[in-house]
Length: 275
Image (cartoon, rainbow, N blue to C red; front, side, top):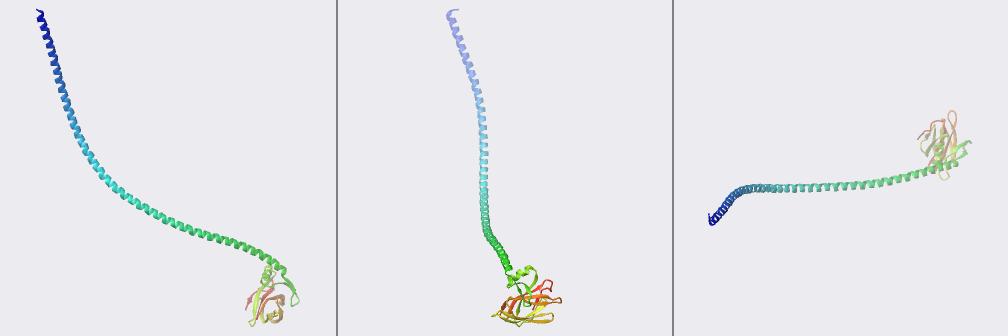
């Protein structure tokens, strides 16, 4: 074979190789394009399905938003009503608290006044108690002084009398001593006889200017005239089955009236006075 022929065959083989490679490449490209087309179709289907789902979700979302808006409006109205009710209730409670506070303040003021009045009363009572203690002490002192002033004198019957009281305070001292019974009296001129113990006394005359008086003493069914007796003078007489000494003293002489006391023994008749 000639070299030219060999060279042509080599070129032909190379061309065939190139053509074969080109064919294989074209075939591969076709296969790749087909596969890619299938992938794109599947992707488009997925995209379409996703769009549908998105549309459905959008519709659901819009419906949910609508419900939420309606619910929100309803809740807003309910909240507004509830808030108004709460505000009204709060105002009512505040008003009640103000009324209760005012009452408490008024009661506190009254209690304060009452406490002040009670404190004043207590202070007054304390003062009064202190005054009473002072008065008691003064009375005791007066009684002691009165005891020293009481006199023993001889009566009109010539008998030494007991202690003589010249006023009511001194008479109270004698009563507290308890040695005899003492009965006070007041006699009015022209009046019926006054019963004292077991005797009767009747005033006949009262001379205020000269401090003298005259009276009748009715004792043991007999009447004795005690004439022209003086102020604070012991007038004595005996009375009873077993005669005991009675004694009367006039401390006050006024116009047509005298006052004094009757003294009887403790073992004598009980002291009574009737008009």
